[in-house]
Length: 169
Length: 280
View 1 (cartoon, rainbow over the protein chains, first blue to last red):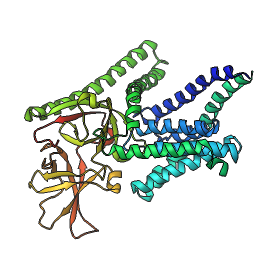
View 2 (view 1 turned 90 degrees about the horizontal axis):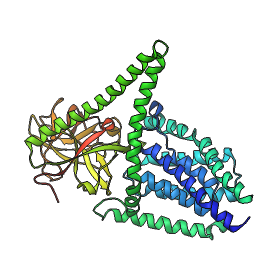
View 3 (view 1 turned 60 degrees about the vertical axis):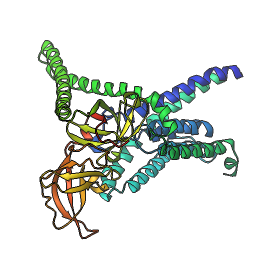
View 4 (view 1 turned 180 degrees about the vertical axis):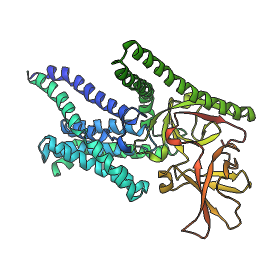
């Protein structure tokens, strides 16, 4: 594998991954663009950041998490809260997958579920919502968002695989 | 774990987190009310969001047309096409009607208050978890918007601009417990203020706390802005009292208020960039 070949494919990899995150941010934050069955919201940027980080090193996972978080922060008042949260998630997921876990769909589901639960629990606690809101909104939203993890895992996996195969050729 | 803590990635993470935290603190001192990173990202992202909002509207039209066409195509292809076209026009008509109603109501308000400087804006984004009704508009500092400008729908107050960048701004609504509005009751001229709490906000309601035994407030009383703080002009409708309840935390009572507009469904709004007595 030559260095020039690697450098040639890397921008495409970055553009594809960043493009997918921007598209996800648009789907999540644009009013009326993504369906909300029974009032549950899809927090797509969390599984997207998790799955993206699983195929990247810690530094890249952190950067994609930062991008996702800043885009999310554009849609509300939580000053850099999401950027901080997704930065940590991106870096931590990448570190865990590289050192402690195998990169599988089951691991992606587990890590996404943990990240979603952590975020939604914090949002529920800080917003001071009732227990009923936890059952009616938080849990359905967690399940709904988690549904998209296999899709993001496949998409980021495909992005990673496509350019790695070329690099090895 | 030790290897990770000693890695470059961990050091970069700590630096990035410190910078983000610093940005959050800086936002409190900047006139835009948003962090520097957010201002840069939103300058690029808000045009994309506007395009996505237009696409969302188009998708709604397409879904409507497709559903009708699929039923009618079995009977008559020509009728299906005609029907779909009429439905598209109907959606356009409904949207135009909604906008005209908004402008008519605001024109009436403007004709009574020459000092208002209005800017029309469309809602292009919302916090997915509701976020106390927080939403994003497609107008920013480039259109004369600044932090603190009141946001209305017709004569109804919706909230205030909390943060803005060049081409977008974020609105803090009446459903946010942090927003207090000086108010008075139209029937009794009683001075009060409105706020909300998480439970009422989840139901789309606000409240006027601290009512004494001598309060004349009753169900159906209309509550308007008093304008005493200089943050809102006088006379904007906040909402209507639905009931008076005893406050469990004090000896006073509070009035539950239904806002004049369904904040979660509003699509177009007017931002008042200037009015007589506006706080600088």
